[in-house]
Length: 61
Image 1 (cartoon, rainbow, N blue to C red):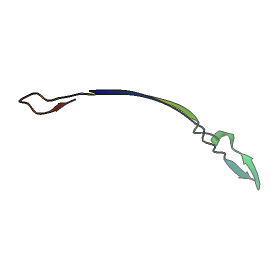
Image 2 (image 1 turned 30 degrees about the vertical axis):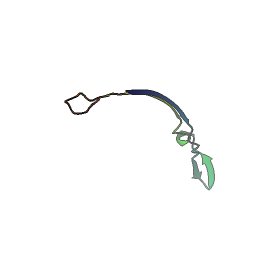
Image 3 (image 1 turned 60 degrees about the vertical axis):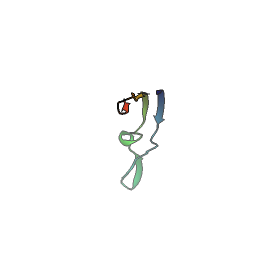
Image 4 (image 1 turned 180 degrees about the horizontal axis):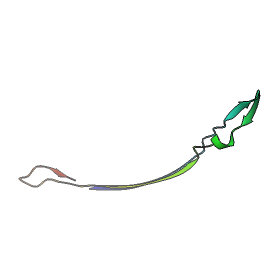
């Protein structure tokens, strides 16, 4: 039998900066900048079990 757990925490900042050209000038587009910033938590657990009886095939779960 084996078992395990895992936790992962990911923080992502996109670093995307959008500029629009208006009348020949670059103007920052605040509405479309850093739109992919997020935090993510992932939790996982597993359990592995196997049994082989004398007259039976291997059983795994």
